Image (cartoon, rainbow, N blue to C red; front, side, top):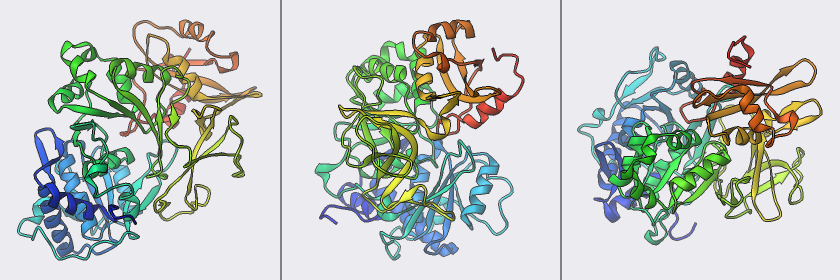
Length: 499
């Protein structure tokens, strides 16, 4: 470990509270949390947790919402400081999801941030709020957690099946954090803004950035384009972080043309997208909306973090999400794990330089191999070093003798000026095995025939959607990912809108 490296997040918080405690770390609505208050409140809460019976290794569910990011931040560091294992769950998750997480994690404690409690809590669950910390010391005499101890369990999005529990140790969460003020990330920004929900890997990354970055973290309690754009000028934002669903909504909003947002957008230097593939037309649109910003695609997953590929989007090469800053942590292989030559497609793997994550309670040999994590994506790196994402392995449509990339079809559909949002899946066909189906959110009176005509010059015949279904919105989880299993269910019904 280098001189300035950090072993745990509680150690980083203690350092920042001592170095500049009155600096604002996190803003949510009217609430501001400085480092000294964060340290004091988390310390008192940690003491209360130990008094309530939390012991090292105990799973503690944190049931909070995006309107309570400051309370969640305090609770999260309290659990880690008390030696517990934090299990974040959004208060907007379905009751069945929360019940599943509580049971699967074996959690006996639930920290609550206000609002409605989840129904039908398992018997024996102890519910606590920060008010239970009243009267407890803000500097409790508790053993410091060890870097190799389990610190967090995140549940995957479950877009294709049952959510999986992914465990991360303290060393994993703190990887890349520093005590060196000269090396703090986002030094070009007074503040950075995001609207990611609690309980997602993207949201947890922003929480770590709130602890580690030079800039103040500003969270949007609920994403609406007009409010999100106002935050830019209110907080002198230099970095913006989105998921593709938010970017699509932002670019379609009349608020983007308001004169008041122009100066604030020109002050932004970084626009980052994560959680899902960013369609090419949307990436180009972000470049126009934020003319002085570098658009960056962050390629990672709940399983792979903190391993991440930073892709710098080049408008001159829109067919690629970007050129990786470094290729040392990426490999492209055959299904047997043998690296393929440059330009050849294969399975994508990321390497973690920190303590790798692992599934909790189930076999993980197909996903985790040493420091490498199998991403479940197909892709290639061209001769100039640009990464091309071909598709999720499970989403490739096998139509007759052809394999169709749903990402490529989605890019083409998104290029139509009357398409607001779109997703593509394969549906069964009695002769070809599968054919392409597109679910589209449209502006105006776009027809399936007009859309297919538009696509004739952009797609091969076997890539053209055999079915086009128009909907008012796509089914997405709270993290913004399209629920493709739900699309397949909808398309399997006899829907009169399908053409």
